[in-house]
Length: 156
Image (cartoon, rainbow, N blue to C red; front, side, top):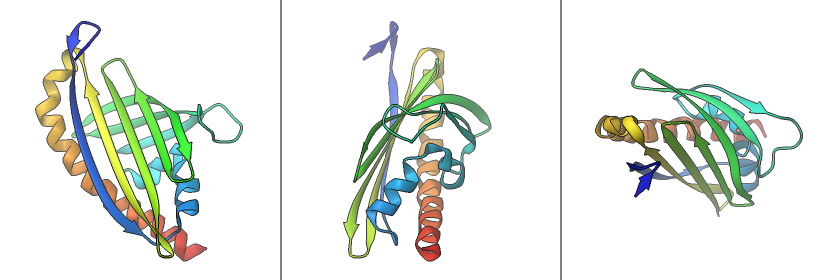
């Protein structure tokens, strides 16, 4: 695949895990990407762009760090339903897609977290290093997201 005439490379990771809160609570929390500051270990800041209720089409400015490299993306809430949240973040050298699917499991939820990072242009040269970093980040994100979401259940 080509983007702007350059070959595209993509790193994809997926994690599936259980949390205590029901899907409604999980989706309501995760749909506000500003909360990524709490559940994504790489996010340094994440601020909403605009006002009004969080809905499909809402935007955030996200600053994250991975292996010492700081990246800024503009994220859009692309899809929102009772069981799914999809964010797409873009900058001039990459596109990030976070897809979070939430299913009921007894009183709690099963979360499937899928993250894709598509790099293009000169940034694609970093792909082998970024793939390893991305794998580690996914594991760290699973742990941190589980902790944060379980605290929501405890405070309810």
